Length: 226
Image (cartoon, rainbow, N blue to C red; front, side):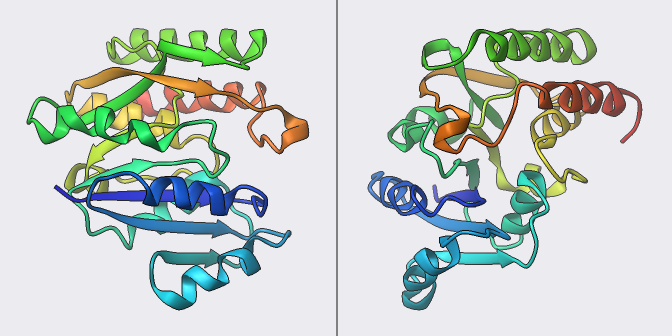
């Protein structure tokens, strides 16, 4: 089984190299795709050496469109059997990849989410915890999803399934959109526990608790439209 890892990044010059090396160190056959979502810092220059030696695929968006758009751009390069999303900030530890993709490799699932709330959390603010809880409850009510962590970054999919979904996401609504569209097909989402160490806005965190409103709207919208 070959894993394709999509790393969307925006203004992550200080962290993206560490993220790439952490992903490369995972002992699993893989393809690494980094999508620079129109960064305005030195991210482009930092990625230049990787782009020239061919060790990873680097796609640069000319303007910042959002995480969802970056993931959709990365999907165009995927050749692996399984796709997983890795944020460039390393709030999520790539050493957990084998645990996340194992249910897919074993034929037990087509989609696996790494749940922070089944594992361990360090550094998540109370309001973010509340927002995550509400999003999970909403997904469970609307789609009978049985999830504890709908908004987790660590989502792994069989490639053919993810590519078959008509994704429209631009920003952080990637998560609710894929959850809605997977569940509307009747596909069960399996959760496995993961470890998570959050960072704050001062450390460069992009998503805000207020983005939960956009995610909530996406869950509701995709309950009724494709």
